[in-house]
Image (cartoon, rainbow, N blue to C red):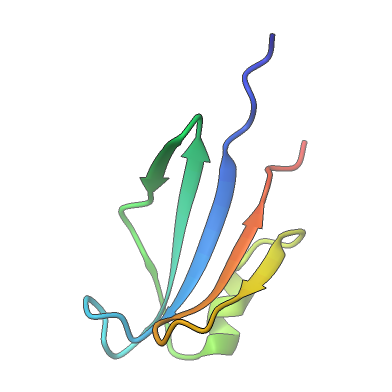
Length: 78
């Protein structure tokens, strides 16, 4: 049986406490119930710049959270 690919999650955050002057993009992976967050964040000046970092082919989920603007999810493409 083949191991499933991890689910990739990209999150756009507006002015989080660790980078209050930026729009931040963070990527994480859900793999067999474990969540791994990339240690490096992409720092952007605007929401448009942050959206340009998101790979094509993912689905956007809106958020009403004051800091988390959008979450993009998808499976890696073969």
